[in-house]
Image (cartoon, rainbow, N blue to C red; front, top):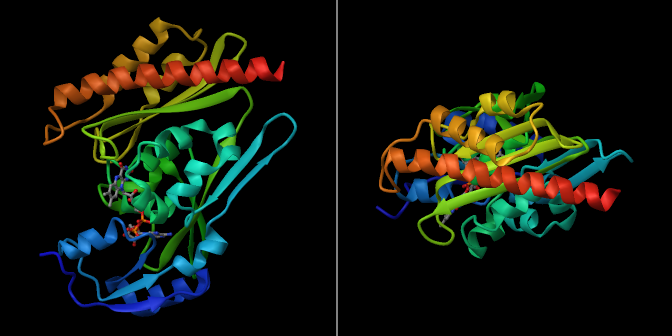
Length: 300
Ligand SMILES: Cc1cc2nc3c(=O)[nH]c(=O)nc-3n(C[C@H](O)[C@H](O)[C@H](O)COP(=O)(O)OP(=O)(O)OC[C@H]3O[C@@H](n4cnc5c(N)ncnc54)[C@H](O)[C@@H]3O)c2cc1C
């Protein structure tokens, strides 16, 4: 069935208004951002809602990318929930500090989806294959959630509660994500899909920090190999203090394959996905280290 069930439509004029509407209309109301995930679900009657609260008028307030770093390169990136895929793809300032966003956006969907789809919608959809969720997991982002009782900040590792479930409550909205930035690091994203712009069979993000020729910290986030995008903590523990090398990437790849939880489906067998988790983890780490070294060469 390609027609949604009847619903009422409201247009929020501010974050407070959106929260007020959610509170008043109860659990049968849902916000709609780009609509690229919610509307297909409504057409397929996988989601049946009485009210849709359109938050597109909040794009001015919640659609900004702010990069605030001191001279040493330490600071924070704030990205509003209504920031569209296209903005994330096109921001040179963001690509300079966190190239993983541009890597991921180059392989997300197509221009039609990227023109409307938002960061907030991607994270709140909580699809285990969502690329931006894997990016935010890799970068240890914090999610800012607002409701009538104030603001809560939830770490990305705790934001997803299961497939299609998040920490956002009934009368709350995600307003922003915050990414801590430290000097000496870089990031990268690798994805294998069945055709250009499709959802991942598996994808892997990596962020690394170097001091000289030692890895001081590393994070890997995977999509499509578990109930939610997954951060593989044993990889961070294994890589800290190691020199970046093919042996270190191979160890990380093996840990990714061991700790992910893929299932066999139309996109591939669980064994094939484990193989991809291994290979894509190695590639993402190799590329992130290369970029961190290039940054250092430019800085010196
Ligand atoms: C053809 C196609 C191909 C795609 N390919 C990919 C792909 O390769 N990789 C990928 O990662 N994604 C892909 N997507 C998904 C795309 O990235 C969507 O834009 C994204 O999943 C949802 O963003 P949205 O703004 O459209 O959210 P919506 O559909 O508007 O909302 C999704 C959910 O999030 C909730 N929500 C939205 N904003 C907020 C907020 N601020 N606070 C609280 N709840 C909120 C909504 O209530 C809803 O439950 C694809 C989509 C399509 C249609």
